[in-house]
Length: 68
Image (tube, rainbow, N blue to C red):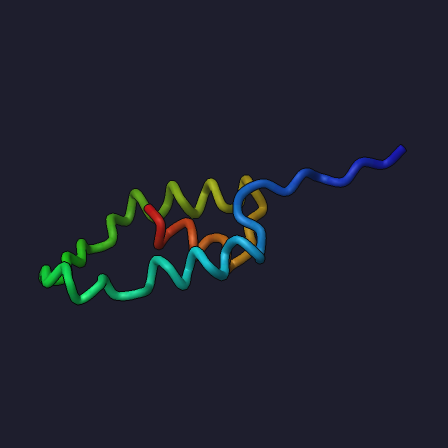
């Protein structure tokens, strides 16, 4: 009996709305200046390592990066 490797992380169906939500600007009611923190290379590397381990798609990786 052959077993397929288990895919973990975000599926393509979950990645699309996650990317959309994470990249959407805040509501105008907030009226706060955008707080764009620079990307920490160590954080990005940890997310990339986890994405490779979990066999995420490119969109799954992008969604994970935007949501953290």
